Image 1 (cartoon, rainbow, N blue to C red):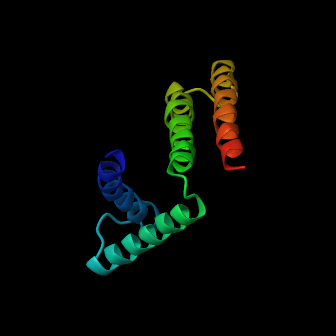
Image 2: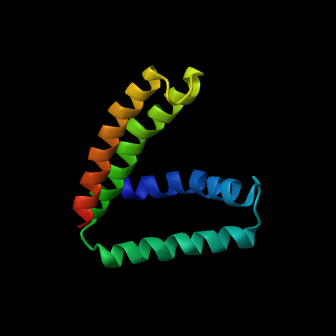
Image 3: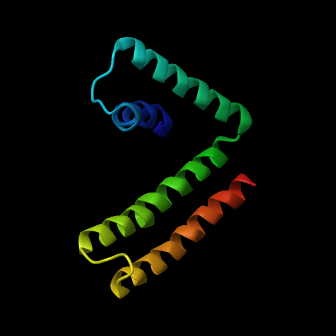
Length: 114
């Protein structure tokens, strides 16, 4: 049930961000939508063929997303919002602590892939 709900719910914002980040615009044509959707379907089919065990794929994606959302993004936001230079002691403590946690999370994803 999670896969049936998560893919359609997450695809629309992802598609919008792809057009905004790579092409610098918020709108897209029907043809561009079909092309990007086709690329997404081909990519997900390739992942399903390479990793037929869905629990491993969910573990890899979950590990990457959880590490990014819980550690990497808050670290970047906290450093930016502090208004201090990156090399300030308070920012370096955040970077070292959350950097270590990111290293552990991404290493776990790497070992799962390996």
